[in-house]
Image (cartoon, each protein chain N blue to C red):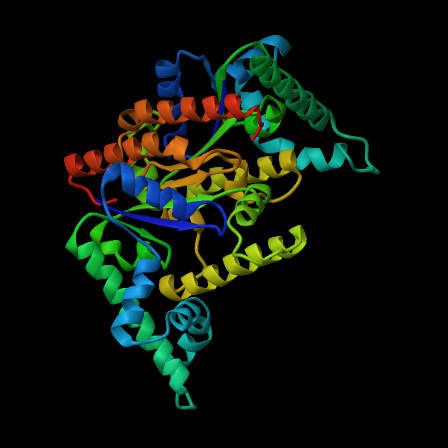
Length: 211
Length: 211
């Protein structure tokens, strides 16, 4: 039972993953993935996080699948190394046991393990409210700045995703369930969502089909 | 508890609606809407169905919200009359009592009743298989022809929708849950889906917010 969660920034995807983890008793991997990478390679965690979400987009076309005229920079080399390592670690989590994987294109990476893929989204008001409640200390963005930040992060994530799936995505087709968390408390929908997921895996096991 | 179901052609949206109706004990309106229109106005049912999905697209911009240089044709007038009537009937269903409304942009039409909006979709294999199982007597389309038919109907529905929401839509934002029915038996997910919907309405009632 591998579950992946993709999400819009601020929609509560991570909270949903953690709470599903509590109900289903499967481990949930999010920042832990990055920490593992950081520890293994001695990279600075902040740097790894930055690289894997952002620099990679600029780096990939230069180094993978394209003939290039310039030698890749050391930063580009490192970014690709981190991405490859990240992919390996995510695959290992899926190989080891049932788990919940948040973000990082895990649904694409562990596709052959036939995960249940969730997409979590919400309206801008809900996302803004959530971001304000969870803002890092000292961050005081105006509503407009916050909205810009949310859109920018989602744009980065979408680009990052594009490299993994090799095309602009048809959002819904990769997911088995898309959940709008606008105006609802995530903790209240998690128990019944966990039931839905269990039923889905039962059907699949019975039909012996991989969806 | 008003529930609307929008869907890709062949994804099982109607079956899902009918089964939800059995579990939740709310009436479900689909073709009935058209029949009611047909009966009230003495239009031929086949004609009404055709008009409300197809001709309306061509008619609307000529007659609503635009200054026009030509007088509308009798067919155009009738198409708009049917659309207006259809809208009234759908609103009346929502006004009367809890119900499930399938297709026909009901989510937009009954927006002020704060419905729970579902979108049902599936991969092409699943949709083709479902269409073959339910094909009208004498219809023998090749897989390619069937796929073309499915895409065409979805395209028509999308255009029809465009007139109601006044813009190309961001598919997911109008829906509270998007359900991928690829490779699963709809009857098996309906009981837990009904529970999800109940919880959603409970949260909304408690929060006194309209989502």
